[in-house]
Image 1 (cartoon, rainbow, N blue to C red):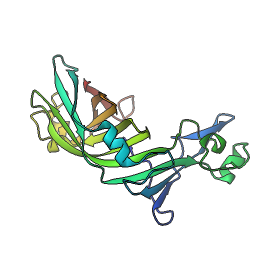
Image 2: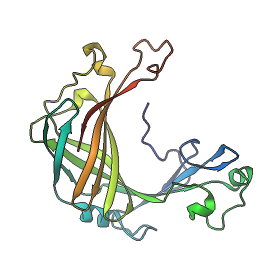
Image 3: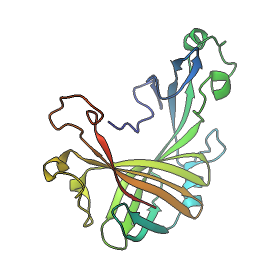
Image 4: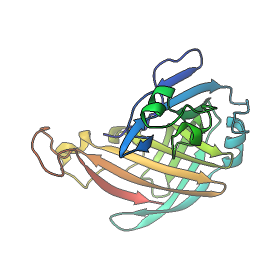
Length: 230
């Protein structure tokens, strides 16, 4: 099961919290205290606390960018990616509550926005930007536009993850790596990044390990299929 969500639930007007544990946390004696993602809705033209706006980011990465798209089964083509105008933006930071910090052996942070003080290593504050993303290949396998969330920690680089249902692909690509009876249960996952004029990424399939949902073994929770990279 893939989860790309960072935030959820209400925490006042224009914000949300997510207290899921395990993804981020401070460690104390091998035990990780959960971090909370706090999301503040901001205008696409408003400067975030990172010092730049959603418009700044999209302007920096605007325009079609191409790269070699190499199929895992052999062969290659050219992929082109372009991000559209920002539709919405959120400033996201990760913190631990005073109770969680104390339980992990830490004192409460002086400023909850300071992630090192808050004890959430690896959880840098970021800007989430909702945009339409054009994704196409010269061989016609993909000719799609997806609603994606770009995540930026600086103004000239973004990363994104998008889950694609095979039946919604607009191009000619069809999954052939698994039993046709399982195709409806497969999800394609597009991982990508745009850094100035460079795009990189990979496309993977997530297939059910056991169609009946029973049994033991390494495939019980599903398996990953390499499709392509760029």
